[in-house]
Image (cartoon, rainbow, N blue to C red; front, side):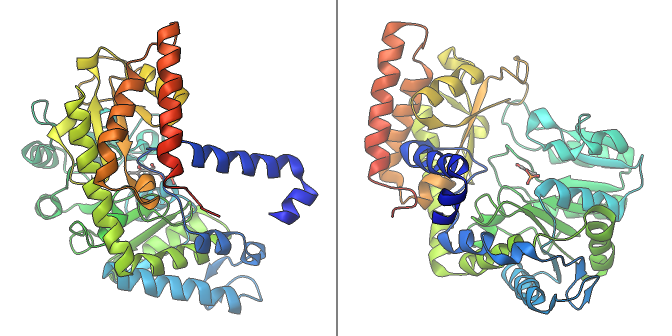
Length: 416
Ligand code: PLP
């Protein structure tokens, strides 16, 4: 950091300001976390310099014998942690890992059965604005309107009707556990590949806090920067029979040289995730999310699916007469970072949305427990119902901001 400050004070200031922002507010984005200083050290290392196209022992560049070690160690750690036959740490992002799965198993035009975007699926699960919806034929399944849960009968009916090449389980805004055995049975019935996109919850699997999809899926992709608390990036684990196709899809089909500093940082995060401390963290993430969700329900919000089994909750704000867009903006003014989110069967357009998504990974890393969740919920509810266009609303948001500052000062992010 001192070198950065000396050479580029402008960017050093940005880095400083971001740390101040992180420390000064409540970070409730469900897909974010505060990675460890050890992971940051690996990321900011000279491993960033090395070209290493290919895989350990089979590179297209010389001088890879050292970085090979980082990848070999990381792959072994991933296989052990997830009980997987194969692992690839090279995908630059979650979306890249997902693209590799399409490349390995599908041809353009193939049908892929996945959760619809407005019901919690990811862009890469068949949205028209993504390669997945443009180059493949998505068959979307939905959650039920009455209880917000995946309708496995509908998934099976659609699978039997469309005979998709691939079935996707996993989402970006689904608060409940997914029944991977049911998905496996449906995939087997129609001869489809079962791909689990575990980006959101893989950290909870790593911490042994929820059941693993690995024994059931052909391939499991994920990001490494959410609950798992690693560097920003992607990864996949799979059955051995798919190893070659997936590796070839990542490189050379999709990517060039891997980011070896990121590969090393992923390895470090995997080591951290294999510890009892991390397992306790994963359990606390869920306990906090559950306590926060019920406290938000007490504040008048409606939890989609009636609660959560994971690190995130989806809250319908219609009972409060507030849109997701208003809630996101007002929370931001009060030092609370969260995102607006469409709820299933949302009457509002996606850019307005009727809900918010909140997650507990960051505040749990900071050391908060159930004891703080009542206050966090009250602060959120007070902020989202404060109309910033009025003096009263401005005053309220200022007061919330102050209280947020006091609360987070007891749980400093990256305490020096
Ligand atoms: N898959 C799911 C389920 C996600 O939630 C996300 C990101 O939030 C991704 C894939 C994409 O990850 P990335 O943003 O690293 O491309």
